[in-house]
Image: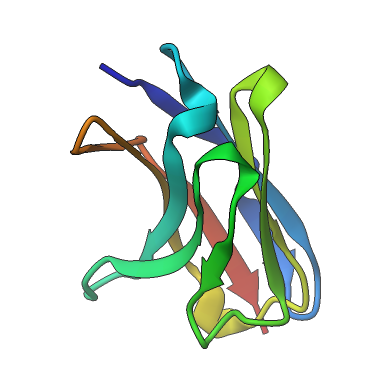
Length: 116
């Protein structure tokens, strides 16, 4: 079982930055694939970024490449999403995800609102 708690969302003007954090409970955090997804009002949840276990390769959605950076601190059981050059279309509820033992776990989400 993995519990995920996100923080760091808020209201920011276009062009600004935010850093989201997600802290995970449970053991073997460093082996988990961690990711961020987002869901805007009326839309389906979509992939944003992923980092493999052990601080391995990262993947990004085309819409955020060059603006967002995913990283992890295994000593703190925490994964981060640094979001720069934010756009109004980045407005969404952002969810942390962990894959462990073939199962996917979700956090409760944190709202990011970007004003124009």
